[in-house]
Image (tube, rainbow, N blue to C red):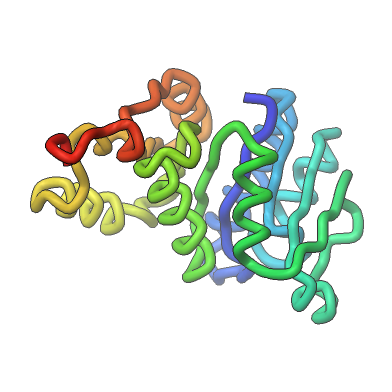
Length: 193
């Protein structure tokens, strides 16, 4: 994995575990020679990931919609900063530029990015690992809900492994490196669906 898209929030929650995690992820990826592709912002967890990766000598590629550049939240220190028309183009570029996805804590935008990466993997638009770093149990209920969707039958059992989960960066990256792509919906016949 040469580059990973990092999905995370632009907020800075009061609990320091979240910002510390963002810094550790940025620095940890850079130390492993893995470039960061992210939302291009300078605020919150996004900015912490980028700053830590840059301080550690890593590559940081930001992808930000025009509207957010106008709001002066763009990180001008990125190795590369791509300005795109909107969110759809942003997520497409995340997928095109990365070898996988790491989701750390965040809000609605982070969930949008995570679920789209999972959905695109199910369908067959990409076959890259989609990781969730479950810091301090932040994603416990989401992981439980994902399992519920599998148990009920809304996620096919053969797609149950698309969401790769780890409680620590080393564990998550090892699982992502070992990820074996599944049979996508595009590869299935009607009777398999």
